[in-house]
Image 1 (cartoon, rainbow, N blue to C red):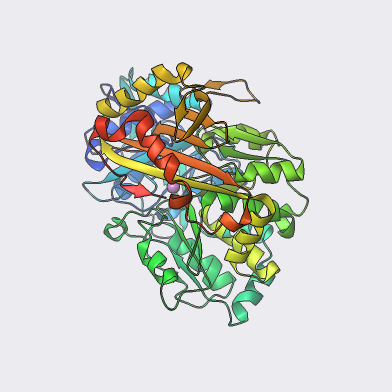
Image 2 (tube, helix red, strand yellow; image 1 turned 90 degrees about the horizontal axis):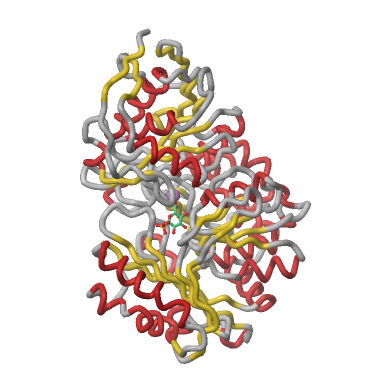
Length: 544
Ligand code: VG1
Ligand code: CO
């Protein structure tokens, strides 16, 4: 089959962000836009001839068209085999699992995660390397360099391949293998968790769970694992059907976007346990009746209880969290006498630590938790970890968290997001603060004294690579903290994220809500940069 070399011109805006390239669907639909980016990825890799690529997406609008283009380009660029999920579906953790299991060269995930989907919404594409994890910064920078220089892309001419049933197809020299998107991932989960104990919990008839797949990719995974393999009643998984527009919602598992689940859990007939996942299946939200578990607390609880779960019974070698994530897990690490690493935002920074065997568990405040079982955060994995703990400890999730606070103290935490800001205004606001940072220590803010103020940078302890400009931190003598950073996953204007944290040891204070306990810091955070004066916004759009 003849490989066509098609002439093209560069686009200036193809720099991957926190997690791949995310743009409006309309941007991706421009002629040559997708092709340019995919070719830039392939041109950044060496030795792809005859190699295996894993390919799949979260089922969102434009996935189907993009998958066919990528298959033809994989053939044009000399890959030997593409493993693709049936229906084009693969969750982000499943892609990571398949890359590792089949020793693939890498993988491509089509997703904009929790961003809304549809013709006027978002699309995204992300490359993962042979360890199953997101491309590290040096590779994403190389992809960007190729994208601004690109002159041609390579493709073959071939009709669309039928992805609706398992099977083998030939596309010139390329073998396309359509596989069950769920089986390998579900098998991996069985090796980590005590499925017998969890099955007993569901069989007892005294435990009711609700899992909200938010009409995104986790529906088929949750149905297979929770309802088929673990025997939870049919209907445990709600909104299980992946839809191209996610049913019109934002598949973001938080208190705002998963509000149906939250209302049910705060209503008169709550389930005993509830969870939700995001568009591509890597995030998780965990709820008990009338009780929300902050992701930073969830990570700390999993770390403190890991020895009760078969896959982690030997103990943890170390843990890591992204810088804005609460330091709750740091206290557990100290208690266990294991190292705790603080990385920039985004899963790509955990990869080296996991590969080097320095950490077992890691997580982010943005509803992401994971372990060394793959190289992505993993929504259902976190849910199964919690189910395993509930099955072993036989107390409600709330009791587990409250006991944890009683032992370790509570890290009150909140994140305030201001979305769709004017990019220039938002950047100028943070630039002004950046210039003042050096003078801030010793000054007063939020009714207390500032101890340090800096722009977070990270030196990877494994390969020495440095990431700068990862968020502005203001730390107080009390240990309280405010962090400001701009999102790297949005597609419209800028999103300001303000993270606030206070540690409280006194158990009698643990019943307060985070917004009350952090009120001073919230006001202080506004005063330090003047969010309203700079952006015209008097309150955040999303509070988690
Ligand atoms: C956000 C989160 C970050 C997460 C990233 C990708 O990035 O804050 O913790 O790793 O999304 O997650 P940002 O730059 O917008 O703050 V996902 O589930 O969207 O792939
Ligand atoms: Co996601």
